[in-house]
Amino acid sequence: MKYRTFGKLGIQGSAFGLGCMRFNGAASGDSIIDEQKAISLIRRAIDGGVTYIDTAYVYLDKTSEIVLGKALLDGYRDKVTIATKMPSEAVHDRASMEELLATELKKLQTDHIDFYLMHGINKEKWEYFKSIGAPQFFDDMKKEGKIRYKCFSFHGPYEEFEYIINDYDWDMVQIQYNFMDVENQAGTKGLELAGKLGIPVVIMEGLLGGRLANAPDNVQALYDAFPVKRSPVEWAFRWLCNHPEIATVLSGCNEAEQIDDNLRIFDTVEAGIMSEEELKLMDDVREAYISRTKIGCTGCRYCMPCPNGVNIPGIFSVWNNLSLYGGDPHQNGQIRRMKENGSGADQCIGCGACEAACPQHLSIIENLQVAWNEFA
Image (cartoon, rainbow, N blue to C red; front, top):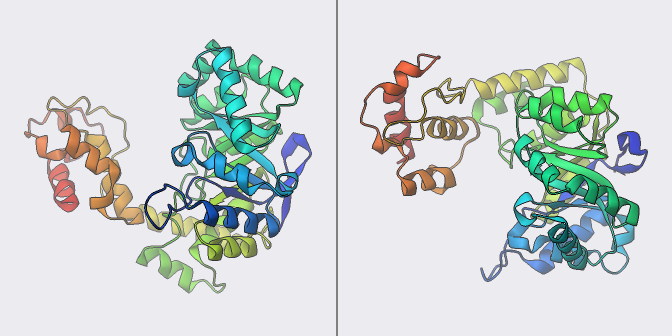
């Protein structure tokens, strides 16, 4: 296992961080998580050199912290650092923050949390956290030793990331980042900004929820043609670890084989490891994915609101994602919700208001019907 320095903190952590959000349910279907299997996987990762374990209060119907706490008995707690999170919807004042932290410590069976994150914030949530005194609470808990580092995980545009990271004395930040998200959310600019500030970056969605693990034909052809043979998973992780600003890359694993494969991959990667030819390959791979885009919708929402309630940018986003990364539309939660709430393309009456407002001059009405037919 390769170990990397956590920026200004000066501590070392494993390049591979185990994410505890995606464990499988029990075989009987009676539980959202197979507890014994999850404990075995967690300990297998730690035995292989993993020192960073990530969970959250809300993961797996609020059971993830409980299972992790059990997995870290028998001396395993002393081998790792724990990251968990405070969701904005669970707190509203100092007392509720104290109660939540006490609950998480009890579930995790520990007296302190190493990395405590304000969960999934954007500017609006950050302002809410400030309004209820969360920054002072984090400062106080750090002084009391109940948390070691003050952190946040982020989902939002770069401009909001820049504002938040400069608005408080953060110890670590967690962002969504992969070779397809270089200009999405915090993106490469956010990663590099954190690096300049000395703030270590932990990466989530390095495989886009697994979508980058199985390449479509035109992408796989590029991998196959390259002289060095690696799996799509290894290429994605190798690209991430090439960035010196990254401290740890999170990966959720459901099987022992996935743990072992990650241990192998993260024993061979380090900052600056990729050659110019390899970086060019990943640029070509990105373009090959993008070439699969169905429609050039940028999500600007000039077409909204639709007079008949059609979720135009939502439909096009799902359509593009299914084309780029694959998936079964009948299992897609966004499509199901649009059908249930009456915001699907079947509600379009062809009034043309959207096309008149679209700065991209897209043929929205026609493409809505094509997309909806494909979903069906």
